[in-house]
Length: 87
Ligand code: FES
Figure (cartoon, protein in one colour):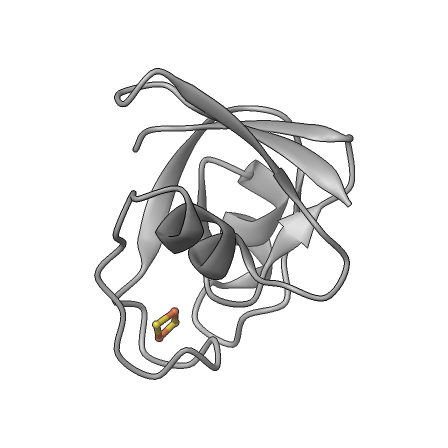
């Protein structure tokens, strides 16, 4: 798992290995707008303020994934142990 800081809501939570970031946020009472929940539609795109995403989506180009400024919260994860998100 890894830690997610939600900068706008002022909450920090843990994302377990069996749940998505969207699911962990929903459990914490922070709803995220979603549609496909499979990394293909782009609805859940969210700005990354700090940390390194582990991209698992089919939306972003390779360059966008490398830049790491945004990520899809329904499928992508974290490779730096901690993310700070604009939510
Ligand atoms: Fe479709 Fe996340 S909800 S990419």
